[in-house]
Each structure stands twice: as C-alpha cells, then as structure tokens.
Image (cartoon, rainbow, N blue to C red):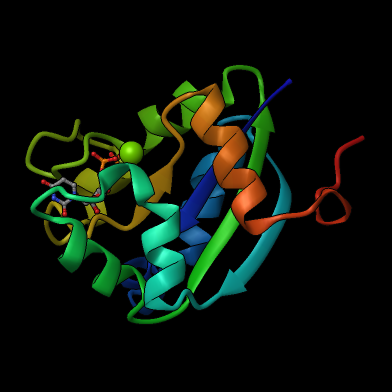
Length: 139
Ligand code: UDP
Ligand code: MG
C-alpha cells in the first residue's frame, strides 16, 4: 500500500473546502490514515518547500503557506501518489482538467487549494515532516 501526503492549503481552509477535498479522496478509494490542522510559520513552510528554494515563486509561496491554518493528511491506497495528483489536477488551474479540485476551486497557480506529494521519496520526506509513527493509523 502506497502512502502520500496531502495538504488543504490556507486558501482551501478559508474557502470551507476541507470536507470537499477529503470527500473527493475518500470517494476515490484513498484512506485517510493521518490527519491534523496546523499553522506553519514561515520557516516551516520554507523547510517543507525546500526543493523550490531559489525559484521566483518561493518567497510568495512560503508567505502564502504560512498565512493561516492548513490541514495536513496522510493518504493510503493503491497508487495513492498518482491518484491524489490526478484528483488535484495541474498546478495551474487554467491547465487543470475539468472536474479536478484545482480546476473547480483554485484561485490561481499559487492559491491552488491542495498539495500532493509527487513521488515516493518526496512522500516519505513530506509525511515525516508533519507526522510521527504514532500519528498514523494503518491496519
Ligand atoms: N507555485 C507558484 N507558481 C508557480 C509554480 C508553483 O506559486 O509558477 C506554487 C503552487 O502553490 C504549487 C507550489 O508552488 O502548488 C509547488 O509547486 P510545484 O511545481 O511542486 O506544483 P505542485 O506539485 O503543487 O502541483
Ligand atoms: Mg510539487
């Protein structure tokens, strides 16, 4: 069983989309095995997005991600990483397929409602960034 890390970003939380995002994942066979609301400070957001340090959007992205609470979750299921990313849609909502979370709810390429890990190594790093073993409930 594969695991991935997803986040309802601060824009998603403020638009009351926590339930909508979780429902979409659950309806598509993903199991929520870890869940919490957090509020990242700037340093924590910078650490989470360390792979993007130096990119033109890094400063604005990490300010946005530390602007309010987020909901972080660990999802488990067959092909959880790619399934989550499919349900999210492309980073830029203008490119996102119809019916995806980002197509439906994102404001712009930065405020795009939801995060999902992009591969097994990033998933392991990102899950460990927010959860310890005792906070993940898997049969
Ligand atoms: N982002 C942005 N401008 C860009 C590219 C990305 O503001 O040109 C933000 C956006 O919030 C995105 C996050 O940075 O979700 C991480 O970028 P990545 O390329 O990893 O996209 P994702 O994996 O989230 O689809
Ligand atoms: Mg990414």
